[in-house]
Amino acid sequence: MFKIHCKDCDSELSFMNIRRLEDLDRTKIGMYCNDCFPAAEAKLKLQRYVETYKENDIYCKDGQYAPYWQSPYYFKCLEDARARIDNRHLGYYSPEFMGL
Figure 1 (cartoon, rainbow, N blue to C red):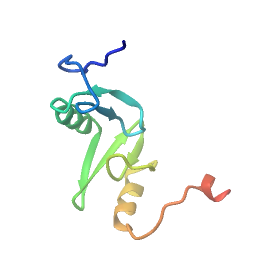
Figure 2 (figure 1 turned 90 degrees about the vertical axis):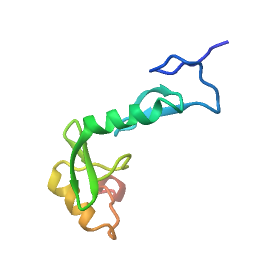
Figure 3 (figure 1 turned 120 degrees about the vertical axis):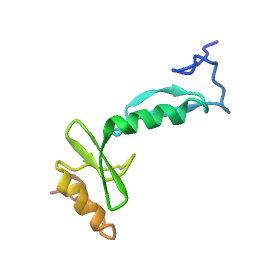
Figure 4 (figure 1 turned 180 degrees about the horizontal axis):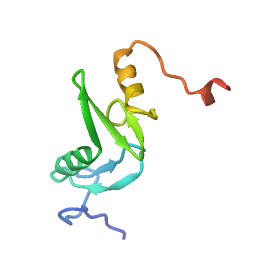
């Protein structure tokens, strides 16, 4: 039977003790136990961190800026991510979604 182990401490994982760490673009980083996950997530967030704007952390991966962690959308420049934080009441629709 296949067994999953924590990426940090190598302990065997069960359904009650498993967390999947994903990057900003939803790529899988690895599986962690509940004890190791917070430290691994904090380390990844620190690598992707750009700045804090109006009490919101902005993250970047491969030149794409996310106005918050696990954001479903990205921006090409930091100013656009800041504009999204300033205008939270507006919905974001990509041109592909609108058929443009």
